[in-house]
Image (tube, rainbow, N blue to C red; front, side, top):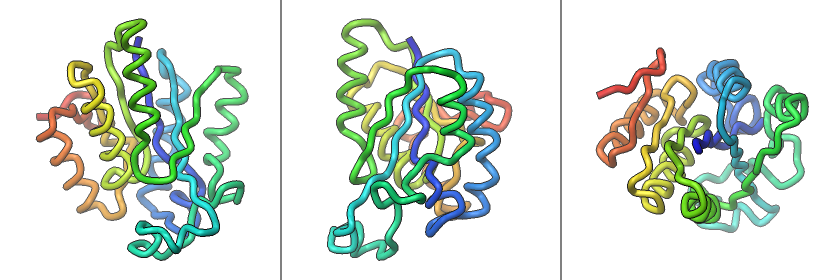
Length: 184
């Protein structure tokens, strides 16, 4: 069994309050990857409440975003449409912080029932939520190959994106390049 984890491809991170041109640029690639993926697909959503600005994260990043139910919280329309068109069952994890321990624990349980051959991650932001979820998966499933598709990720800045990819390489997470080939 193989899994694709699409991290936080939400309106606020693409065109909303924390959107970037890099996030907009990867969107077609993420949609294509998701459309053609031949394994299980999981989505995560950054999910905050009105009390976000009083949290530690909110004090360090004082920009309301991904407030539960708001337009910015929703998955990007092209991805949402793809889920509905495909008629596939996908699991969505709403997470109040960078990484989802629930997701990693569920994958570990799934691996006990049927061996997971690989987990691949893509999405936003490479340097915050992608790296957090990749490291959680690696911690819960140290013998399962974990991949990150660099061409389907964007960071807060191009430099922090590159730094996160390098950090993940050091933690034995495999990075795929533009052609889908493993780097390093």
